[in-house]
Each structure stands twice: as C-alpha cells, then as structure tokens.
Image (cartoon, rainbow, N blue to C red; front, side):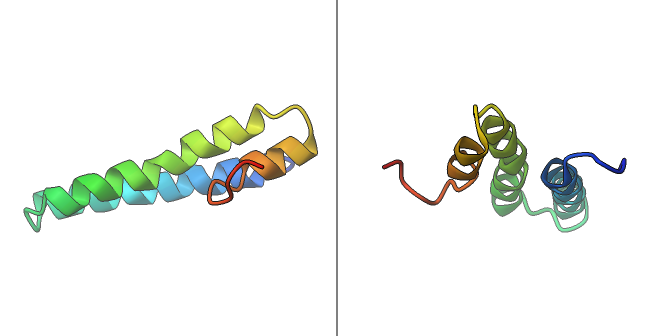
Length: 73
C-alpha cells in the first residue's frame, strides 16, 4: 500500500481479497456452497460501504456514513 493512501480503503480491499480466497477454498476443497456464498456477499460488501462513506461531503458525513450499524438520526 502506498504511503499517504487511504488506510481504510486498503485494509477493506485486503480483507475482501482474503474473503474471496476463502470462498474459493470452501467451494473447491470442502464443497460448501450455501454458507460460502453468504460469506462472499458479506465480506465484499465492506468495500461498497467504504466507497459510499467516501462520498460524504465532510469528515462528519464520513464518520456518520462509516457507521452502518447506527441508524440515521
């Protein structure tokens, strides 16, 4: 990762890559399809959430959008 880059973006991408590799392993080696597909959807959704949070207009918007478990006030 480049210095000065977005740390959250880099870490979420690395996590998504690991999730995809785990999905490939589970489907190929263990023949597990249902749980692995849900894992793939959930694990890669983090990137979409980070991208959505980056679209905020201010730092406060980023913090608010970056907390998906908190309902909008």
